[in-house]
Image 1 (cartoon, rainbow, N blue to C red):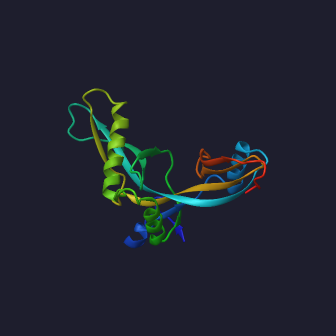
Image 2: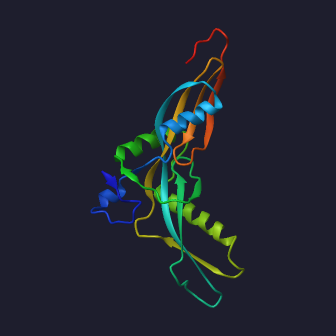
Image 3: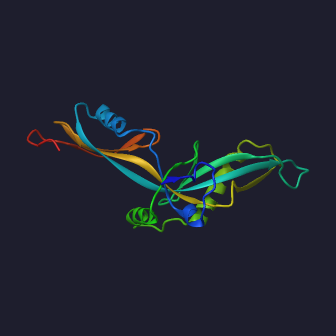
Length: 202
């Protein structure tokens, strides 16, 4: 079932609105493998899709002059992603879209990754998003101007599952696991191990 949460079209029921969206990756598994092999030449590896939970908060930001009580005009749209485990926010340059996922998939991922801390709620994500947007806009407005921040619609924070690729493998010298971002191909090394001459390839 295709999710219309990122397209601007209306869903038919409130339950559909609340379904998490499993975002489509922009980076293919072959590209993730190629990124791994650039780090470890000649490596063979397994590529597995993994997802990380985020709250997506679309906002509208308007500014007003000293003599105006209310902002006018359409304002600036700002899409904020808040990590649903760490609570950290970031400004996205895209509108999330993808396929509707089961509610249980979100719950299972949150449960597996938030054992050491309390995962932020949707309302907490909205506050984080608004604070981040305000900080961003304050750097560009003139002294004394007011800032109005509101939701881009009345649906609040919504759940999205951001795609990544977990690549595990190695060559005769090294074994490693690398996490490749499924949207922009940035990556970081999860683990790396130097093999002894007698060790077999993983």
